[in-house]
Image (cartoon, rainbow, N blue to C red; front, side, top):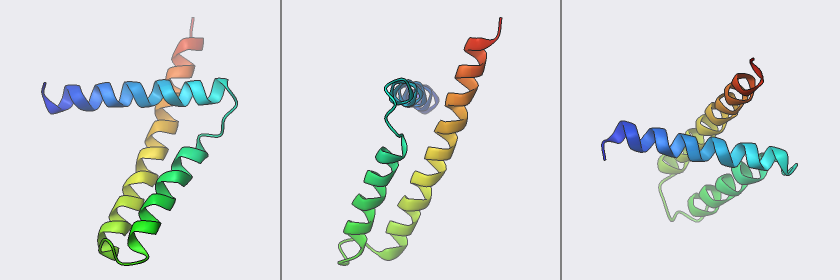
Length: 81
């Protein structure tokens, strides 16, 4: 399977999870907070370099923002006649 297809499938699954969280009234920020805690706990005692921790935290934030925008797009498309 090529990388573009893998990324597309991953994004589709992530958007579906985001929509499910919203329908169940579960804050999607909980998942983001769990990821942040994981990387902070790994970086604080020096288990990973701070630069790696910072890069992972920035990537998680960027992914969260992208998923929020993708979820909004999917919802708006579903509302369009």
